[in-house]
Length: 289
Image 1 (cartoon, rainbow, N blue to C red):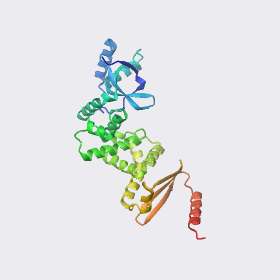
Image 2: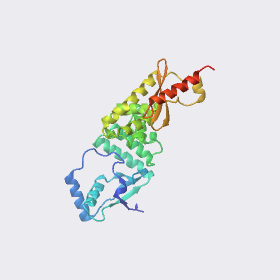
Image 3: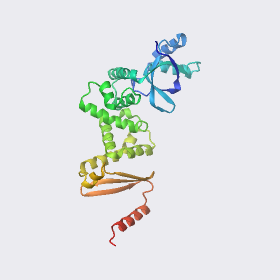
Image 4: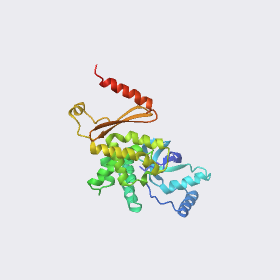
């Protein structure tokens, strides 16, 4: 039985759900494809997969047919009727694994994926249901990767998961920068890094990097200086608390030093009056009756 063909609204397709060639589409070749579709219709439906996490009304990602969809978008933009939907095969998760692997292989050969793009396609493959875990996706999509590369992919995937919709031009991040962010996330700095990027309100990659850099340095300093967990902490279980978010505009961070700890208060509500109140409370806490 042949696969059913669905008419999928262009507005529901996320062209950027998976990494593609970073070179621009050839305008002349795209014009020829557009004219062919207008004259004879679409001879081969595109292949789509359903996103596990729809975003702003977009429900599908592209497995094949990126140029055909671009041609449909151009026809729709100039007012050609009946081109706001594209004929498509909807691939089930069981079919996606091989399609993801083939797409990644083609992109690696033709364009060379950036570290961010490799991690993102791995994460999207898991979200789509093609693979159950990040490790399973890495095994299938990057079978030649050694242990070090696999570990770096896993770390970078955590960064994508947290900052995918926050960072500007994340594909320009070097692997070293990605891994620094990943290490800070592991150390518990993920939420405050995300907040720092959002509060910059900048869409310039370097400005965003400068906003999170102090937290990366702090994370690395804590990794180097934080002593082994004491028995009391181990008996309570879990990692030490590094942050306490009182309100959206007040965060308390614990910083380890070589001879103790510092509590750092940041945010718009970290005022002099608040510090006076805190010192009064500390004095009462340690006062001898």
